[in-house]
Length: 273
Image (cartoon, helix red, strand yellow):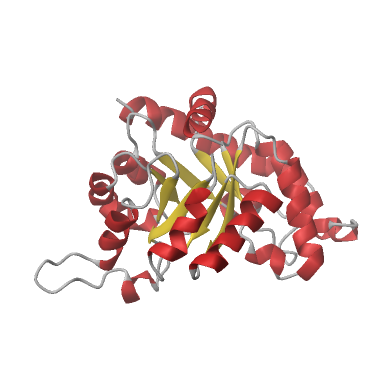
């Protein structure tokens, strides 16, 4: 999917919502466990209930590969079921030496037909650039994440300049790819830093996890992160897909997605100028 197609979806739906498909067999409604493929059945019903309100879906790959071959099958069935006009993100956080990264890219972009994949940039240029060689595919680089451990390395500052590691990562990666193929992960719980990060990457999309169950503020993220072209994909996983663990789980997920879409529409009118 190219940038124009993504922007068209955002404009049509008045939304920059990404629904995280972190499907856990221990958390889905018990009646689904009787299904031949409980993971896919859960995802299918979530997609049916939320696709009107979101512009992206983000399966976290760990929830699928933990089940071996059957989990990968559930993931592929899920990707095939998602409407083609909706952006798909393989939240895999891959990143290795060049030839290995190229194979990761082929796996997610060619074999599975994802639109994008999250990438860990710790090993540098040759771990990121192989993912950039695929037309109309996106690389989403870990920038400043929302987990507690992000402070261990990402905030380390260079002596003399005070430039932090995450700032160096975001600046350097923009030398390798364009805003039409490169996004950054910026955690919602780091909203106070969003303004500075937006200054560093004014033309890039940010994938923002951490809104909802992790405590991030959609309003704050949007205030500092929205641009005149939107520039945000805000993810909610548990807050939507586990809104209910009963037979009404899909209906409740749809309600939560619609609530967020309504709030996003208002925020777009307010900040996209």
